[in-house]
Image (spheres, protein in one colour):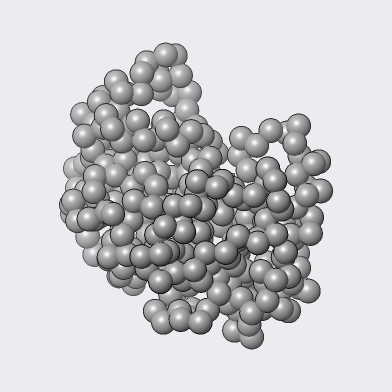
Length: 312
Ligand code: CP
Ligand code: NVA
């Protein structure tokens, strides 16, 4: 496996290796400062980022490398240079490329033409690096035995919903996504991919439209913003109205298991997708989850550059 383009690219063995290495990097961040010594990693983003950028730059630094941050309009790509030529040029200067943009197809094309590893740092369809931070957090809280547990995402059927289903399927988990019906439901293709993976791992995929049924007996309630980067502003009022029954409230949390946790990839909008008393309350693990963005991206870089992930 050269690139991490989609969550579905990862095998269960890859995830286990990445989470074990990330746990090591959490304890000893500087245990591999020679891994990228005298090498650079390009980080190209056409959308804003707080966590992923900080996590990526610090991960590269902890591996002894130099991050080169490139904003969307920094490159000639914005003036008509092709993705293929851009990929070839970056490959001559950097040892890996971390990319955040809109179209999944653009990330796939960068992967096709780059000779170095390309890592998806969020597209409109997926967010694989986030899910590794989420699952190391889940593992820290509940351990490796997740039998009988239910992992629920509530909210917009967006990139996070797709990634949640896919990673849950890889982990053999019972994953639930609860969204409005219609245009804010997850893409049927993403659900089909997760369902196919679950059929080989013993996982169970459920797409529901009833927030209370989804929360009932859950070990995790996860949510994300209702307006994602790139969502049309013209849809805002329709979208917020459709999503309002899916807000994570104390009332919803009360339906979950006694030892349940609340998760959110952040950024959050308190009073919109989640009540402040939930996200800032005792069950919330958001800070631990956010700080695992660095440990997990460090693990991805470490193993991808060494060619140690097998993929599906
Ligand atoms: N969770 C996440 O990807 O955050 P940023 O958009 O701040 O990178
Ligand atoms: N769904 C959100 C995730 C942000 C990390 C977005 O794409 O904006």
